[in-house]
Length: 231
Image (tube, one colour):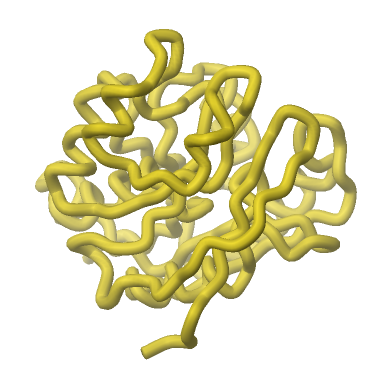
């Protein structure tokens, strides 16, 4: 019997590719059954952490991927996240373990400090992390993502690392070739964030339109809105 697993995702390329591997790669698909998608949000803005994607967009993203949607809301912002992140996420972990779900999937690639933090929090709550992309080369991963037929657009940019004119651009070969040499191909250092809106695991493409841009410090965001509800 396959183990149920929750996908930790903000709707971007890495978690989407990790989910694809979970469903199709023999190292994972015979062991795990994805059952839900967890996204963390700022309670005040109703936008996802880091990506600033609307709650309703992520709800449709999860539905198209055939997953139950679990939004978690943070109330106490800090300089680099939320003070109540461990408590809110930890409580959710506890509730999942009580339902027999003790595995979570993450799209992390090579940031040791991020993985260490996740693993330490997971261990406190009886959760096992699954990392299908861990320590693979970013350039290979992003080309795999595109070659599979996934579609994504840039929804956030760190202007100290990348030009703001990249906001709204489609993630494709031309975009990758134009990236400065110091920018990680998968943006593991937060250079940019994406929203994946179509691809082989989607039951239907997300009907979205670009809205206004906003800025918080050196981070710039593109507001993406649904143009229609679920099909």
